[in-house]
Length: 455
Image (tube, rainbow, N blue to C red; front, side, top):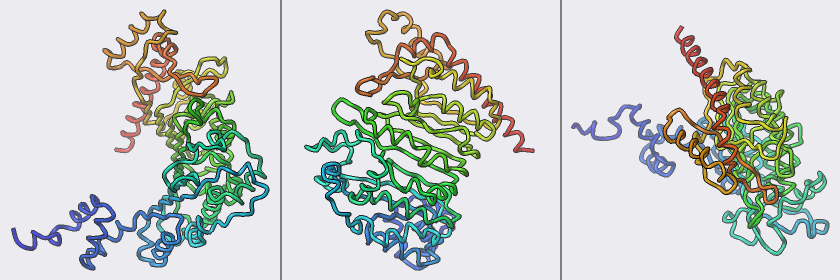
């Protein structure tokens, strides 16, 4: 092998790019320091995704990149991670507390970066991850909703907040002020036409005054892709967080805060917490889903996790049958126990309603898990033969599958599988029949679309 072929410089540019794609940021920086030609080769990868934290040092580094037009042009994604201490004493002495100095947690340079993202002319994606911690614990180690001390913070989400309390909290609590100012800064980017996607990870279920501003609504209206996951955890040793009134109250306003304003979104993802599923909105432990038929007129892809099937969801999907291409539902379920018509929404109602809406663009439907283990419990021991029949079918028939039904405990809020309903639904076959009909339509759509693309 010649010396030229033995070195990296002897490889084609395509192979060098392949090698670069496997390296982490640290390795890329080391390689880029070897010579100017490699620095130029690697720069688009090094600056494609940049990280911003709510510190002076981090924001100054990002600001420096923004001032270099060549490097700024490489930036496609911004990951913003912010931390601030949570103070549990708000309700005890709110009236006596002076406004907080937010500058240690949201320096002016951070606001400058977030409010002037147009300096990155090819920026497409913004990711937000805001973490808050108890002021008695090391920053970044303990999430605030799990904190437990003499102030009774296990029930942090119990009390509803009127608008004046929200505004007051943002004056005297660092983490509330940080949220408000973060979203306000993003709302300044109304002329950054390249931004296509906003991803909000682990949204704290607390109202933010900025969510009601016209600037925020206009910013949401620019987006083409929207991802939202919601924080949640156990509220105490027994009660799950969906027993807390303000938690449910805030989640029931997701349409007001976000969904109503996503006028150009084509790809939508909503992930609830496993301990606090979203949907139904019929009891104190159920939040509204907030999806309505007039929202997101251009929607093509819907991805959901830990969502309760409800009329809102069925109507939303059917209303968008003309544009919907993809439906992904992971760990979603129906809840029938204790409900009456028209609030009972079985899986077969979702499938048959969507099928009858004739979604001609729908080419992918994924409902997971495909098979849910059925457990013998006391309340269905009298139906042991039915359980055995269903279990054998799921085990031996490759085409068999079942769909999740659950019950929410009416006191503590936790979920439990509704084995009885799952057995009954398998036996009557309506869910599987409706699902099979929908999947047949999906296959026909895909074949038609594949054929037309070849013409």
